Amino acid sequence: MGILAALAAAGVFMLRGGEDKPKSGHMMRALAVRVALSVTLFLLVLLAWALGWIQPSGIPLGR
Image (spheres, rainbow, N blue to C red):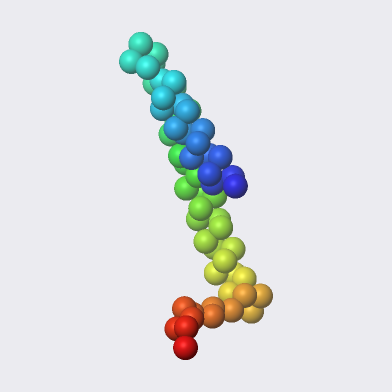
């Protein structure tokens, strides 16, 4: 949810930032937060897999 919220915030900052306003960096900060949250989520999934908390099940073939 935090990743989507950061992406939405970046979109809002992009749409609000008209040509008459100076670039404030809010959009870039929101995108940096989104990237950091995505990397953290990926590392947590890898950690959970390494500790055996989750197991890959593959794609069911439907047989």
